[in-house]
Image (cartoon, rainbow, N blue to C red; front, side):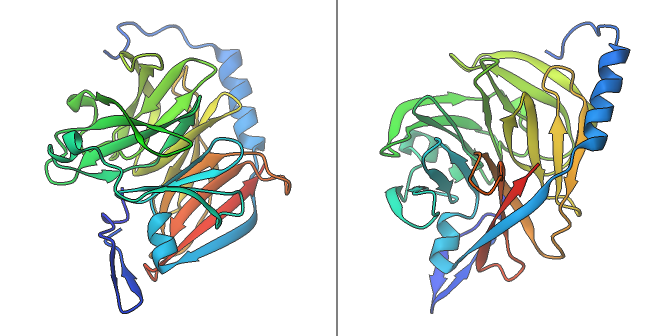
Length: 285
């Protein structure tokens, strides 16, 4: 979740970071299931490059990331940062982005963000009781809060709302609970009303971020293997796209989708075991 709740203390040049289920089941489509299994078995992702940020730069990029196609939008526990595609040139910044109305309810942590149609969708949770999960919308150019936020069903988000993913093609928005998620929560993009929950073929633990690529939801997990999962949002079928095996003490974070010149498509953040650096790794299929 959460970089153990990065507290953002910079001292003597050091960063210290804490860090309606559907009523009936349709008969399974055996042919489709077999085809999906074959595709999962042949799927292969390779790391093409890695960018490392340190100290304050790491703090500002330590939780989540998305892209509007021309820039990166990173987030920390409390703020949003927009950069050029070099990851360094700052285009906009909102250091304290959590709206007061949500902050007054205890909101103190922004999870992995997602982009759609000029807006940043930001999940916000309260780290004490996890009793007030929200999705807040921000202008993607200025990073200013738009005044629109949606409170999420508490029963579907025990342990907070660590990520959100917009599926523009389906007109849907996805979330899931953080610990051993049994279902995918599916909301209507237009107004964030709950459409359904989709049972997953296996529970997924510690999802830190997710985005849609080629019709599938790719989820970054902070399990022991730092697994990149591939989820069918329609059927709930879960497969492993890649076990990243980043080593002890590394914490997986958010994920973005953007085709880049080196062939990379998926871009995933992780916090280094030293807790003062953040890696931005780029993967090609």
